[in-house]
Image (cartoon, rainbow, N blue to C red; front, side, top):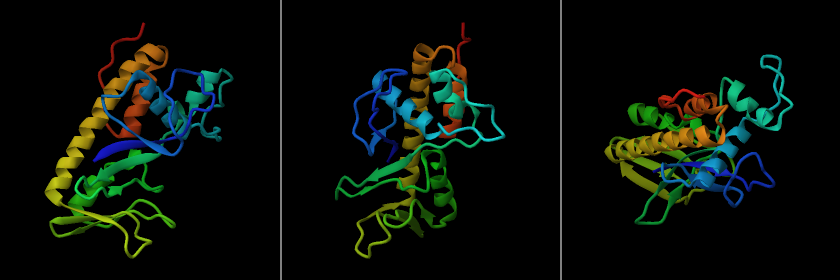
Length: 210
């Protein structure tokens, strides 16, 4: 199980260095990313929230960097396209995040494990769902297809995978905080706090900014 971010090609983005990526790919998040890959992830997360302010938020600044970060730093409910990806190495079946349960909702998996309620991640034409039958979890890649590939695993195994995914997210958050201290020194604390809210994790301890 990997936390992943759905990403697009940068297309002329020049506010900080980013990696060359394919559009509509998934970038696994962990503490092993290169600085350019962290830049790509941060570009995408900020971009997901780069929406014009409404009456409840301050106006968009004129400065390009301030403008691009404005939504990330001012929205109450932040969004990040992606989620948790599960791969069955024995069959090659991959369960991908859907459109209705973003990375910010990854803790929904814990609630699913605890109460067993069906967890849906998307809608037609692709509807990934997770179901619990006693001590067994079934992940259906696309509930719109009667012959959809599935992954089955135990509840105990899923808890173990979730713990690993949380470690990956925490490692990515620490890496991104270090990246922000170098690439966005004037915004480091605010950007790190916002990212912690996106990932639903405690913000790491920060050194005082100069």
